[in-house]
Image (tube, rainbow over all chains, first blue to last red; front, side, top):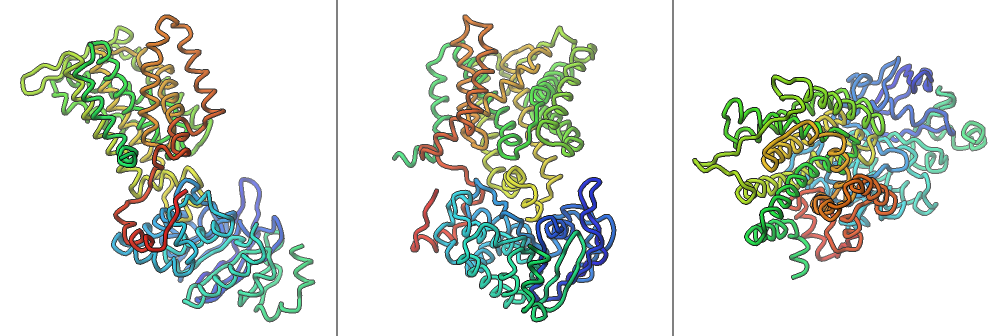
Length: 233
Length: 334
Protein backbone atom coordinates (compact mmCIF):
# COMPACT_ATOMS: atom_id res chain seq x y z
CA UNK A 1 0.00 0.00 0.00
CA UNK A 2 2.73 2.51 1.01
CA UNK A 3 6.20 2.16 -0.46
CA UNK A 4 8.96 4.52 0.58
CA UNK A 5 12.24 4.22 -1.26
CA UNK A 6 15.51 6.09 -0.68
CA UNK A 7 13.69 9.03 0.93
CA UNK A 8 15.83 12.03 1.76
CA UNK A 9 14.33 15.06 3.50
CA UNK A 10 15.20 17.71 6.04
CA UNK A 11 14.77 21.26 7.23
CA UNK A 12 16.74 24.08 5.59
CA UNK A 13 20.35 23.02 5.11
CA UNK A 14 19.96 20.12 7.57
CA UNK A 15 19.40 16.70 6.01
CA UNK A 16 17.48 14.54 8.51
CA UNK A 17 16.42 11.51 6.46
CA UNK A 18 19.30 9.90 4.61
CA UNK A 19 17.68 7.35 2.34
CA UNK A 20 14.78 5.84 4.29
CA UNK A 21 13.12 2.84 2.65
CA UNK A 22 10.11 1.06 4.10
CA UNK A 23 6.77 -0.49 3.23
CA UNK A 24 3.33 -0.67 4.81
CA UNK A 25 1.37 -3.56 3.26
CA UNK A 26 -2.40 -3.29 2.98
CA UNK A 27 -4.25 -4.14 6.19
CA UNK A 28 -1.08 -4.33 8.30
CA UNK A 29 0.17 -2.40 11.32
CA UNK A 30 3.78 -1.34 10.85
CA UNK A 31 5.74 0.37 13.60
CA UNK A 32 8.62 2.78 13.12
CA UNK A 33 10.70 2.93 16.28
CA UNK A 34 13.53 5.24 17.17
CA UNK A 35 14.90 7.58 19.81
CA UNK A 36 14.62 11.35 19.98
CA UNK A 37 15.96 13.01 16.85
CA UNK A 38 16.15 9.73 14.92
CA UNK A 39 13.90 11.04 12.13
CA UNK A 40 10.57 9.41 12.96
CA UNK A 41 8.40 12.55 12.76
CA UNK A 42 10.37 13.79 9.74
CA UNK A 43 9.58 10.50 7.96
CA UNK A 44 5.85 10.97 8.57
CA UNK A 45 6.05 14.66 7.57
CA UNK A 46 7.78 13.76 4.30
CA UNK A 47 5.26 11.01 3.50
CA UNK A 48 2.37 13.36 4.31
CA UNK A 49 3.83 16.16 2.18
CA UNK A 50 4.30 18.55 5.09
CA UNK A 51 7.95 18.87 4.06
CA UNK A 52 9.36 18.26 0.58
CA UNK A 53 11.31 15.14 -0.23
CA UNK A 54 14.73 15.99 -1.69
CA UNK A 55 15.34 12.56 -3.14
CA UNK A 56 13.62 9.20 -3.29
CA UNK A 57 10.05 8.15 -3.94
CA UNK A 58 6.88 7.70 -1.92
CA UNK A 59 4.17 5.65 -3.61
CA UNK A 60 0.72 5.16 -2.19
CA UNK A 61 -1.46 2.50 -3.82
CA UNK A 62 0.95 2.69 -6.76
CA UNK A 63 0.64 6.47 -7.15
CA UNK A 64 3.74 8.65 -6.57
CA UNK A 65 2.89 11.20 -3.89
CA UNK A 66 6.30 12.55 -2.87
CA UNK A 67 5.91 15.88 -4.68
CA UNK A 68 2.31 16.54 -3.61
CA UNK A 69 1.24 18.98 -0.88
CA UNK A 70 -0.34 17.57 2.27
CA UNK A 71 -3.96 18.28 1.34
CA UNK A 72 -3.52 16.31 -1.89
CA UNK A 73 -1.84 13.39 -0.09
CA UNK A 74 -4.80 13.47 2.30
CA UNK A 75 -7.09 13.30 -0.72
CA UNK A 76 -5.47 9.99 -1.68
CA UNK A 77 -6.60 8.52 1.64
CA UNK A 78 -3.61 9.11 3.93
CA UNK A 79 -4.35 10.67 7.34
CA UNK A 80 -1.88 11.77 9.98
CA UNK A 81 -2.47 12.10 13.70
CA UNK A 82 0.29 14.56 14.61
CA UNK A 83 2.52 14.40 17.65
CA UNK A 84 0.94 16.07 20.69
CA UNK A 85 -2.49 15.76 19.02
CA UNK A 86 -2.49 19.33 17.63
CA UNK A 87 -6.18 19.88 18.31
CA UNK A 88 -8.05 23.09 17.54
CA UNK A 89 -8.60 24.16 21.11
CA UNK A 90 -11.67 26.39 20.57
CA UNK A 91 -13.52 23.81 18.47
CA UNK A 92 -15.81 21.26 20.04
CA UNK A 93 -15.35 17.51 19.67
CA UNK A 94 -18.22 17.40 17.17
CA UNK A 95 -16.66 20.23 15.15
CA UNK A 96 -13.39 18.26 14.98
CA UNK A 97 -15.18 15.20 13.66
CA UNK A 98 -17.14 17.32 11.21
CA UNK A 99 -13.93 18.94 9.96
CA UNK A 100 -12.29 15.54 9.49
CA UNK A 101 -15.30 14.12 7.65
CA UNK A 102 -16.15 17.08 5.44
CA UNK A 103 -12.95 16.96 3.40
CA UNK A 104 -13.52 13.52 1.95
CA UNK A 105 -17.23 12.79 1.89
CA UNK A 106 -20.54 14.20 0.74
CA UNK A 107 -22.56 16.44 3.04
CA UNK A 108 -25.32 13.85 3.32
CA UNK A 109 -22.86 11.18 4.49
CA UNK A 110 -21.16 13.21 7.21
CA UNK A 111 -23.58 12.21 9.97
CA UNK A 112 -23.20 8.54 9.20
CA UNK A 113 -19.43 8.89 9.08
CA UNK A 114 -19.31 10.59 12.48
CA UNK A 115 -21.55 7.90 13.92
CA UNK A 116 -19.24 5.14 12.68
CA UNK A 117 -16.21 6.89 14.20
CA UNK A 118 -17.97 7.29 17.54
CA UNK A 119 -18.39 3.52 17.70
CA UNK A 120 -14.63 3.30 18.29
CA UNK A 121 -14.71 6.03 20.92
CA UNK A 122 -18.05 5.79 22.76
CA UNK A 123 -16.64 7.91 25.58
CA UNK A 124 -16.64 10.93 23.26
CA UNK A 125 -20.43 10.79 22.86
CA UNK A 126 -20.95 12.53 26.17
CA UNK A 127 -18.40 15.24 25.30
CA UNK A 128 -19.49 16.15 21.78
CA UNK A 129 -20.08 19.82 22.61
CA UNK A 130 -17.10 20.29 24.89
CA UNK A 131 -14.16 22.27 23.66
CA UNK A 132 -11.28 19.99 22.73
CA UNK A 133 -8.94 22.13 24.84
CA UNK A 134 -10.97 21.28 27.96
CA UNK A 135 -10.58 17.49 27.62
CA UNK A 136 -8.09 15.20 29.37
CA UNK A 137 -4.96 14.03 27.53
CA UNK A 138 -6.47 10.60 26.80
CA UNK A 139 -9.70 12.10 25.51
CA UNK A 140 -7.74 14.56 23.37
CA UNK A 141 -5.86 11.67 21.81
CA UNK A 142 -9.21 9.98 21.07
CA UNK A 143 -10.40 13.19 19.36
CA UNK A 144 -7.19 13.44 17.32
CA UNK A 145 -7.53 9.84 16.09
CA UNK A 146 -11.29 10.23 15.57
CA UNK A 147 -10.73 13.39 13.50
CA UNK A 148 -8.34 11.48 11.25
CA UNK A 149 -10.66 8.46 11.07
CA UNK A 150 -13.62 10.63 10.09
CA UNK A 151 -11.97 11.10 6.70
CA UNK A 152 -12.09 7.29 6.31
CA UNK A 153 -8.42 7.00 5.41
CA UNK A 154 -6.90 3.94 3.79
CA UNK A 155 -3.67 4.55 5.69
CA UNK A 156 -3.64 5.99 9.19
CA UNK A 157 -0.32 7.37 10.44
CA UNK A 158 0.01 7.87 14.19
CA UNK A 159 2.90 9.98 15.51
CA UNK A 160 3.73 8.90 19.05
CA UNK A 161 0.11 8.58 20.20
CA UNK A 162 1.16 7.27 23.63
CA UNK A 163 3.13 10.41 24.46
CA UNK A 164 2.06 11.92 27.76
CA UNK A 165 -0.63 9.30 28.46
CA UNK A 166 -1.04 7.16 31.58
CA UNK A 167 -0.15 3.43 31.16
CA UNK A 168 -3.80 2.38 31.46
CA UNK A 169 -4.81 4.77 28.68
CA UNK A 170 -1.92 3.51 26.53
CA UNK A 171 -3.24 -0.08 26.88
CA UNK A 172 -6.70 1.12 25.83
CA UNK A 173 -5.10 2.95 22.89
CA UNK A 174 -3.38 -0.29 21.85
CA UNK A 175 -6.72 -2.12 21.86
CA UNK A 176 -8.29 0.63 19.75
CA UNK A 177 -5.44 0.48 17.21
CA UNK A 178 -5.95 -3.30 16.94
CA UNK A 179 -9.71 -2.87 16.47
CA UNK A 180 -9.10 -0.34 13.72
CA UNK A 181 -6.75 -2.75 12.00
CA UNK A 182 -9.36 -5.54 12.22
CA UNK A 183 -11.59 -3.45 9.98
CA UNK A 184 -8.89 -3.57 7.30
CA UNK A 185 -7.18 -0.23 7.94
CA UNK A 186 -3.45 -0.01 7.28
CA UNK A 187 -1.60 1.73 10.11
CA UNK A 188 1.87 3.22 10.35
CA UNK A 189 2.66 3.71 14.02
CA UNK A 190 5.60 5.86 15.03
CA UNK A 191 6.57 5.24 18.65
CA UNK A 192 9.16 5.35 21.35
CA UNK A 193 6.97 3.10 23.47
CA UNK A 194 8.42 -0.31 22.57
CA UNK A 195 5.82 -2.20 24.56
CA UNK A 196 2.90 -0.63 22.68
CA UNK A 197 4.58 -1.17 19.30
CA UNK A 198 5.36 -4.83 20.05
CA UNK A 199 1.80 -5.45 21.22
CA UNK A 200 0.10 -4.19 18.06
CA UNK A 201 2.50 -4.16 15.07
CA UNK A 202 3.16 -7.04 12.72
CA UNK A 203 6.34 -5.53 11.31
CA UNK A 204 8.93 -3.24 12.87
CA UNK A 205 11.40 -0.75 11.43
CA UNK A 206 14.06 0.83 13.61
CA UNK A 207 15.37 4.24 12.58
CA UNK A 208 18.53 5.89 13.84
CA UNK A 209 20.29 9.00 12.52
CA UNK A 210 17.85 9.24 9.61
CA UNK A 211 18.52 5.70 8.36
CA UNK A 212 16.67 2.42 8.83
CA UNK A 213 19.11 0.29 10.78
CA UNK A 214 17.04 -2.84 11.31
CA UNK A 215 13.67 -4.21 10.28
CA UNK A 216 11.71 -7.42 10.35
CA UNK A 217 8.51 -9.11 11.57
CA UNK A 218 7.61 -8.35 15.18
CA UNK A 219 8.15 -12.00 16.22
CA UNK A 220 11.79 -11.62 15.31
CA UNK A 221 12.12 -8.76 17.82
CA UNK A 222 10.08 -10.30 20.61
CA UNK A 223 13.13 -11.30 22.63
CA UNK A 224 15.28 -8.39 21.71
CA UNK A 225 14.24 -5.78 24.25
CA UNK A 226 17.85 -5.08 25.07
CA UNK A 227 18.52 -4.39 21.42
CA UNK A 228 15.67 -1.88 21.44
CA UNK A 229 17.12 -0.23 24.49
CA UNK A 230 20.42 0.24 22.72
CA UNK A 231 18.76 1.77 19.64
CA UNK A 232 15.97 3.75 21.23
CA UNK A 233 17.27 4.47 24.72
CA UNK B 1 -36.33 34.68 28.20
CA UNK B 2 -32.67 35.31 29.10
CA UNK B 3 -31.58 32.41 26.92
CA UNK B 4 -33.52 33.88 23.99
CA UNK B 5 -31.81 37.28 24.50
CA UNK B 6 -28.43 35.56 24.82
CA UNK B 7 -28.73 33.70 21.54
CA UNK B 8 -30.27 36.62 19.62
CA UNK B 9 -28.12 39.42 20.92
CA UNK B 10 -27.03 40.70 17.51
CA UNK B 11 -30.51 40.93 15.96
CA UNK B 12 -31.61 42.71 19.16
CA UNK B 13 -28.70 45.13 18.79
CA UNK B 14 -29.89 46.04 15.28
CA UNK B 15 -33.49 46.47 16.46
CA UNK B 16 -32.28 48.69 19.30
CA UNK B 17 -30.28 50.87 16.91
CA UNK B 18 -33.25 51.09 14.57
CA UNK B 19 -35.41 52.29 17.45
CA UNK B 20 -32.77 54.74 18.62
CA UNK B 21 -32.71 56.40 15.22
CA UNK B 22 -36.11 57.94 15.97
CA UNK B 23 -34.85 59.63 19.13
CA UNK B 24 -31.29 60.78 18.36
CA UNK B 25 -30.02 64.19 17.35
CA UNK B 26 -27.97 64.68 14.19
CA UNK B 27 -24.58 64.34 15.85
CA UNK B 28 -25.47 61.16 17.76
CA UNK B 29 -26.85 59.75 14.51
CA UNK B 30 -23.55 60.53 12.78
CA UNK B 31 -21.70 58.63 15.53
CA UNK B 32 -24.07 55.66 15.28
CA UNK B 33 -23.46 55.55 11.53
CA UNK B 34 -19.70 55.74 12.03
CA UNK B 35 -19.88 52.98 14.64
CA UNK B 36 -21.74 50.68 12.22
CA UNK B 37 -19.14 51.41 9.52
CA UNK B 38 -16.41 50.42 11.97
CA UNK B 39 -18.34 47.26 12.84
CA UNK B 40 -18.19 46.24 9.16
CA UNK B 41 -14.45 46.93 8.90
CA UNK B 42 -13.73 45.26 12.25
CA UNK B 43 -15.76 42.18 11.22
CA UNK B 44 -13.43 41.84 8.24
CA UNK B 45 -10.31 42.33 10.33
CA UNK B 46 -11.68 39.86 12.86
CA UNK B 47 -12.08 37.20 10.16
CA UNK B 48 -8.40 37.37 9.21
CA UNK B 49 -6.90 38.25 12.60
CA UNK B 50 -9.23 36.60 15.08
CA UNK B 51 -10.43 33.55 13.18
CA UNK B 52 -7.59 32.85 10.71
CA UNK B 53 -4.85 34.11 13.06
CA UNK B 54 -3.07 36.20 10.43
CA UNK B 55 -1.47 39.43 11.57
CA UNK B 56 -2.51 41.61 8.62
CA UNK B 57 -1.90 45.30 9.10
CA UNK B 58 -3.41 46.78 5.96
CA UNK B 59 -7.06 47.43 6.68
CA UNK B 60 -6.71 51.20 6.53
CA UNK B 61 -5.40 50.73 2.97
CA UNK B 62 -8.18 48.31 1.97
CA UNK B 63 -10.68 50.75 3.41
CA UNK B 64 -9.10 53.55 1.36
CA UNK B 65 -9.37 51.48 -1.82
CA UNK B 66 -13.07 50.92 -1.13
CA UNK B 67 -13.74 54.56 -0.30
CA UNK B 68 -11.93 55.97 -3.35
CA UNK B 69 -13.31 53.38 -5.82
CA UNK B 70 -16.84 53.99 -4.62
CA UNK B 71 -16.46 57.81 -4.64
CA UNK B 72 -14.79 57.89 -8.07
CA UNK B 73 -17.37 55.58 -9.62
CA UNK B 74 -20.16 57.82 -8.36
CA UNK B 75 -18.46 61.17 -9.04
CA UNK B 76 -16.82 60.51 -12.40
CA UNK B 77 -19.04 57.85 -13.96
CA UNK B 78 -22.36 58.56 -12.30
CA UNK B 79 -22.65 54.96 -11.13
CA UNK B 80 -25.44 54.24 -8.64
CA UNK B 81 -24.32 53.66 -5.05
CA UNK B 82 -25.97 50.25 -5.17
CA UNK B 83 -23.37 49.26 -7.77
CA UNK B 84 -20.48 51.40 -6.47
CA UNK B 85 -20.52 49.87 -2.97
CA UNK B 86 -20.14 46.19 -3.97
CA UNK B 87 -17.66 47.26 -6.67
CA UNK B 88 -15.62 48.96 -3.93
CA UNK B 89 -15.66 45.74 -1.92
CA UNK B 90 -14.65 43.68 -4.95
CA UNK B 91 -11.81 46.08 -5.86
CA UNK B 92 -10.45 45.81 -2.31
CA UNK B 93 -10.87 42.01 -2.40
CA UNK B 94 -8.94 41.83 -5.67
CA UNK B 95 -6.11 43.88 -4.22
CA UNK B 96 -6.33 41.81 -1.01
CA UNK B 97 -5.97 38.66 -3.07
CA UNK B 98 -2.93 39.98 -4.88
CA UNK B 99 -1.24 41.09 -1.65
CA UNK B 100 -2.32 37.82 0.00
CA UNK B 101 -0.54 35.58 -2.50
CA UNK B 102 3.00 36.80 -1.71
CA UNK B 103 2.12 37.49 1.93
CA UNK B 104 1.26 33.84 2.71
CA UNK B 105 4.95 33.00 2.54
CA UNK B 106 5.48 34.88 5.80
CA UNK B 107 3.66 34.95 9.12
CA UNK B 108 3.52 36.79 12.45
CA UNK B 109 5.63 39.90 12.68
CA UNK B 110 6.93 39.53 9.10
CA UNK B 111 3.38 39.45 7.73
CA UNK B 112 2.62 42.59 9.74
CA UNK B 113 5.65 44.30 8.18
CA UNK B 114 4.76 43.22 4.62
CA UNK B 115 1.18 44.44 4.98
CA UNK B 116 2.31 47.66 6.65
CA UNK B 117 4.63 48.26 3.68
CA UNK B 118 1.65 47.75 1.38
CA UNK B 119 -0.34 50.32 3.38
CA UNK B 120 2.43 52.87 2.93
CA UNK B 121 2.46 52.24 -0.83
CA UNK B 122 -1.31 52.85 -0.96
CA UNK B 123 -0.85 56.07 1.05
CA UNK B 124 1.84 57.21 -1.39
CA UNK B 125 -0.41 56.49 -4.39
CA UNK B 126 -3.33 58.36 -2.82
CA UNK B 127 -1.14 61.39 -2.18
CA UNK B 128 0.67 61.43 -5.53
CA UNK B 129 -1.78 60.16 -8.18
CA UNK B 130 -3.35 63.59 -8.24
CA UNK B 131 -5.32 63.38 -11.54
CA UNK B 132 -7.39 60.58 -10.02
CA UNK B 133 -7.25 60.99 -6.23
CA UNK B 134 -6.68 64.77 -6.05
CA UNK B 135 -3.80 64.04 -3.68
CA UNK B 136 -3.94 65.59 -0.22
CA UNK B 137 -6.81 67.85 -1.32
CA UNK B 138 -9.07 64.82 -1.17
CA UNK B 139 -12.37 64.38 -2.99
CA UNK B 140 -15.97 65.18 -2.23
CA UNK B 141 -18.36 62.25 -2.23
CA UNK B 142 -21.69 62.59 -4.00
CA UNK B 143 -24.77 61.67 -1.97
CA UNK B 144 -26.41 58.43 -3.09
CA UNK B 145 -29.73 58.66 -4.90
CA UNK B 146 -32.38 55.99 -4.47
CA UNK B 147 -35.52 56.13 -6.62
CA UNK B 148 -34.96 59.84 -7.27
CA UNK B 149 -34.47 60.70 -3.59
CA UNK B 150 -31.06 62.07 -2.59
CA UNK B 151 -29.91 60.64 0.74
CA UNK B 152 -27.85 63.52 1.98
CA UNK B 153 -28.14 63.50 5.77
CA UNK B 154 -27.11 60.98 8.41
CA UNK B 155 -30.70 60.01 9.25
CA UNK B 156 -31.26 58.95 5.65
CA UNK B 157 -27.96 57.13 5.11
CA UNK B 158 -28.42 55.33 8.45
CA UNK B 159 -30.85 52.84 6.88
CA UNK B 160 -28.37 51.91 4.15
CA UNK B 161 -25.53 51.54 6.63
CA UNK B 162 -27.66 49.53 9.08
CA UNK B 163 -28.86 47.18 6.33
CA UNK B 164 -25.36 46.66 4.95
CA UNK B 165 -23.97 46.07 8.44
CA UNK B 166 -26.69 43.47 9.14
CA UNK B 167 -26.03 41.69 5.84
CA UNK B 168 -22.26 41.70 6.37
CA UNK B 169 -22.73 40.35 9.91
CA UNK B 170 -24.99 37.56 8.64
CA UNK B 171 -22.40 36.81 5.97
CA UNK B 172 -19.62 36.67 8.60
CA UNK B 173 -21.71 34.23 10.64
CA UNK B 174 -22.33 32.11 7.55
CA UNK B 175 -18.59 32.07 6.75
CA UNK B 176 -17.61 31.10 10.29
CA UNK B 177 -20.05 28.20 10.34
CA UNK B 178 -19.07 27.04 6.88
CA UNK B 179 -16.27 24.74 5.78
CA UNK B 180 -14.15 27.83 5.10
CA UNK B 181 -14.66 29.22 8.61
CA UNK B 182 -13.54 25.99 10.18
CA UNK B 183 -10.53 26.02 7.86
CA UNK B 184 -9.71 29.55 9.13
CA UNK B 185 -9.79 28.39 12.75
CA UNK B 186 -7.84 25.23 11.90
CA UNK B 187 -4.94 27.10 10.27
CA UNK B 188 -4.92 29.54 13.18
CA UNK B 189 -4.62 26.78 15.79
CA UNK B 190 -2.30 24.37 13.96
CA UNK B 191 -1.19 24.52 10.36
CA UNK B 192 0.21 20.98 10.61
CA UNK B 193 -3.10 19.55 11.82
CA UNK B 194 -4.99 21.64 9.27
CA UNK B 195 -2.88 20.35 6.39
CA UNK B 196 -3.12 16.81 7.76
CA UNK B 197 -6.91 17.22 7.78
CA UNK B 198 -6.95 18.00 4.07
CA UNK B 199 -7.10 21.79 4.26
CA UNK B 200 -5.33 23.71 1.50
CA UNK B 201 -3.58 26.21 3.75
CA UNK B 202 -2.29 28.52 0.99
CA UNK B 203 -5.71 28.86 -0.65
CA UNK B 204 -7.42 29.37 2.72
CA UNK B 205 -5.00 32.19 3.62
CA UNK B 206 -5.50 33.97 0.28
CA UNK B 207 -9.28 33.67 0.73
CA UNK B 208 -8.98 35.10 4.25
CA UNK B 209 -7.14 38.08 2.78
CA UNK B 210 -9.68 38.56 -0.02
CA UNK B 211 -12.77 38.28 2.21
CA UNK B 212 -11.31 40.48 4.90
CA UNK B 213 -10.35 43.12 2.30
CA UNK B 214 -13.87 42.91 0.85
CA UNK B 215 -15.28 43.85 4.26
CA UNK B 216 -12.80 46.74 4.57
CA UNK B 217 -13.65 47.87 1.02
CA UNK B 218 -17.38 47.93 1.73
CA UNK B 219 -16.63 49.63 5.06
CA UNK B 220 -14.55 52.23 3.23
CA UNK B 221 -17.42 52.88 0.84
CA UNK B 222 -19.83 53.34 3.77
CA UNK B 223 -17.25 55.53 5.51
CA UNK B 224 -17.18 57.86 2.48
CA UNK B 225 -20.97 58.19 2.83
CA UNK B 226 -20.69 59.30 6.44
CA UNK B 227 -17.89 61.81 5.73
CA UNK B 228 -19.06 63.25 2.37
CA UNK B 229 -15.37 64.04 1.77
CA UNK B 230 -12.31 61.77 1.88
CA UNK B 231 -8.55 62.34 1.86
CA UNK B 232 -5.51 60.10 2.46
CA UNK B 233 -5.31 61.08 6.14
CA UNK B 234 -8.61 59.28 6.77
CA UNK B 235 -6.85 55.97 6.08
CA UNK B 236 -3.43 56.32 7.68
CA UNK B 237 -1.75 54.11 10.26
CA UNK B 238 -3.91 55.58 13.02
CA UNK B 239 -7.01 54.20 11.26
CA UNK B 240 -5.47 50.71 11.11
CA UNK B 241 -4.44 50.88 14.78
CA UNK B 242 -7.94 51.93 15.75
CA UNK B 243 -9.41 48.94 13.92
CA UNK B 244 -6.94 46.67 15.68
CA UNK B 245 -8.04 48.16 19.00
CA UNK B 246 -11.68 47.46 18.11
CA UNK B 247 -10.98 43.78 17.45
CA UNK B 248 -8.65 43.28 20.43
CA UNK B 249 -10.76 45.24 22.94
CA UNK B 250 -14.04 43.81 21.67
CA UNK B 251 -12.74 40.29 21.41
CA UNK B 252 -11.06 38.53 18.50
CA UNK B 253 -12.60 35.30 17.18
CA UNK B 254 -16.06 36.31 18.31
CA UNK B 255 -18.79 37.76 16.10
CA UNK B 256 -19.94 40.02 18.91
CA UNK B 257 -16.42 41.31 19.60
CA UNK B 258 -16.34 43.86 16.74
CA UNK B 259 -19.69 45.29 17.91
CA UNK B 260 -18.36 45.81 21.43
CA UNK B 261 -15.03 47.17 20.19
CA UNK B 262 -16.55 49.51 17.61
CA UNK B 263 -19.09 50.83 20.13
CA UNK B 264 -16.45 51.59 22.75
CA UNK B 265 -13.91 53.05 20.36
CA UNK B 266 -16.39 55.25 18.53
CA UNK B 267 -17.83 56.77 21.67
CA UNK B 268 -14.67 56.87 23.78
CA UNK B 269 -13.00 59.60 21.66
CA UNK B 270 -16.14 61.68 22.18
CA UNK B 271 -15.61 61.44 25.91
CA UNK B 272 -11.97 62.45 25.38
CA UNK B 273 -12.93 65.27 23.03
CA UNK B 274 -11.28 67.88 25.19
CA UNK B 275 -8.07 65.91 25.44
CA UNK B 276 -7.11 65.28 21.80
CA UNK B 277 -3.48 64.51 22.61
CA UNK B 278 -4.57 61.86 25.06
CA UNK B 279 -6.67 60.02 22.45
CA UNK B 280 -3.81 58.29 20.66
CA UNK B 281 -1.99 57.56 23.92
CA UNK B 282 -5.30 56.30 25.31
CA UNK B 283 -5.77 53.89 22.40
CA UNK B 284 -2.21 52.63 22.81
CA UNK B 285 -2.68 52.09 26.55
CA UNK B 286 -6.02 50.37 25.98
CA UNK B 287 -4.41 48.00 23.48
CA UNK B 288 -1.55 47.17 25.89
CA UNK B 289 -3.89 46.60 28.83
CA UNK B 290 -6.19 44.31 26.84
CA UNK B 291 -3.41 42.30 25.17
CA UNK B 292 -1.82 41.63 28.57
CA UNK B 293 -4.78 41.31 30.91
CA UNK B 294 -7.81 40.51 28.73
CA UNK B 295 -6.32 38.75 25.67
CA UNK B 296 -9.69 37.38 24.59
CA UNK B 297 -11.24 40.85 24.75
CA UNK B 298 -14.51 41.78 26.41
CA UNK B 299 -16.51 39.29 24.34
CA UNK B 300 -14.13 36.50 25.33
CA UNK B 301 -14.52 37.48 28.96
CA UNK B 302 -18.32 37.40 28.70
CA UNK B 303 -18.20 34.06 26.84
CA UNK B 304 -15.98 32.54 29.55
CA UNK B 305 -18.43 33.73 32.19
CA UNK B 306 -21.28 32.13 30.27
CA UNK B 307 -23.02 35.45 29.63
CA UNK B 308 -22.52 35.26 25.85
CA UNK B 309 -22.72 32.05 23.80
CA UNK B 310 -19.53 30.50 22.42
CA UNK B 311 -19.02 30.72 18.64
CA UNK B 312 -20.06 27.59 16.80
CA UNK B 313 -18.02 26.49 13.84
CA UNK B 314 -20.28 23.81 12.41
CA UNK B 315 -23.70 23.79 10.94
CA UNK B 316 -26.35 23.01 13.52
CA UNK B 317 -28.38 21.27 10.86
CA UNK B 318 -25.61 18.82 10.08
CA UNK B 319 -25.19 18.05 13.76
CA UNK B 320 -28.90 17.41 14.29
CA UNK B 321 -28.70 13.65 13.96
CA UNK B 322 -26.02 13.54 16.66
CA UNK B 323 -27.85 16.05 18.84
CA UNK B 324 -31.02 13.95 18.68
CA UNK B 325 -29.07 10.88 19.77
CA UNK B 326 -27.24 12.53 22.60
CA UNK B 327 -30.29 14.19 24.13
CA UNK B 328 -31.09 10.90 25.81
CA UNK B 329 -27.49 10.35 26.87
CA UNK B 330 -26.76 13.89 28.06
CA UNK B 331 -23.80 15.83 26.67
CA UNK B 332 -22.23 18.62 28.66
CA UNK B 333 -20.94 21.87 27.20
CA UNK B 334 -17.77 23.61 28.30
